[in-house]
Amino acid sequence: MTLQAISRVSLWLAAAVLGVQAQAAPVQDFGDPNVARLAARFSLQGDAQPPVRIIQFGDSHTAADYFSGELRARLQARYGDAGIGWLPPLNVPGQRNALAYVRSDGWALRNSRRDIDPDFPLGGFVAVAQRPGASITVKPRTEDNGLWRVRVWLRQSADNQMLTVDDGNGLRRAQVSAGGGWQRVEAKLKLPFTLRAESLPAPDIGGYELEKLAPGVVVDTVGSNGAQLSLWRSWGAAWGRQLAARDADLVILAYGTNEAFDAKLDLDEYKATLQGAISLVRSQLPQAAILMLGAPDSARRKGGAVSRECAGPQRPLLLSAVQQTQRQLARDNHLLYWDWQQAMGGPCSMRIWLQQQLGRPDMVHFTAPGYTRLGDDLYEGLSQRLAR
Image 1 (tube, rainbow, N blue to C red):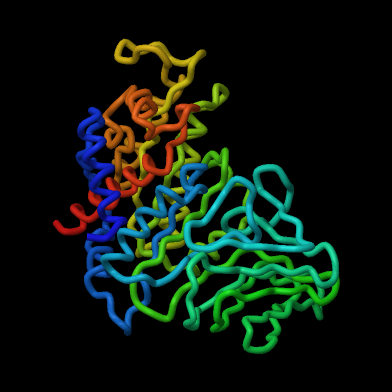
Image 2 (cartoon, rainbow, N blue to C red):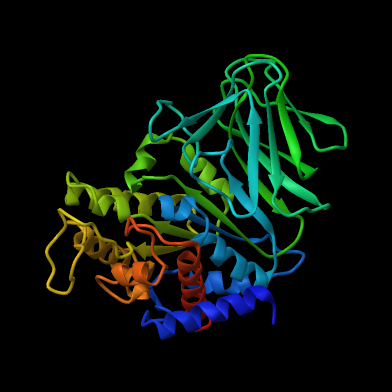
């Protein structure tokens, strides 16, 4: 047994001894029409098949890439490692990717949570060169000497804007048509590689897609700290085209925590936003299954909802309403659904997770072992569902 497997078993045994329920919450199927296709995609992996692509959209739980990272690790261990997936164009403070990182010099980051751009791409981040010679290096956390399929999303406002690409095997040029919005440039490169703006103005960068030339699974983590699902409205009108180009087999919607803490949240508007997101995914990726994650249990020390079940810290005022809306729309739209709160042990379970060092002191986020356990739980639930 590997050290990773031993640590995972130890964590589950500790959770059982300490009273935290360690049984996987099921992934419910409310009639998703693409479940059979998704199961077939996993079972038919081979050299002639494109990788199984999964995109998880979400807030800080996703942006940390511990929860989604564990799901990725389990899937890739079983079905094959097809690579890193989507990355934002620059390092985003307070966020991480478990498999790669981006280092830059002379570039500025625009973030759709605070900045204005009429055409934010998928993910809501844009890298803008600030001086000639500005550079970005994309590097895997684990050395890999093979060739990768690298796709870079670029946007340029005038002709003759260009980036150079260097992966140690000579310089290449990356250039797209002016005024065409976000366009994807593809090349086979070794990692790490460096992009450099030789002059200004230079093309803006909207993100990367990194896949190995091998079958398996790739999991994109498209997260933003503090985000609500309504953040999608801040992205450009055409970002759905990028979603379609990703050709995903499964889309995971993992929002709800920040909505639950928003005292000004209009529940009718939230329901309409969530329905709009589901409809967008269905229209752009008609072949993809959609998995809704119910918001996890969380707590606040003052100003929360009074609950007979909870002693001490109370639940966010709108948590139950947000969870009910998520479940209702999952049922109405025939999606897959995973009850994150049930996986924790039910309502008011965050205080137990905090006591057992699986939750963080803010009673919103989780420790790395906590996220690992949740990722394992989701993997087990999804595997059981697809095996039926």
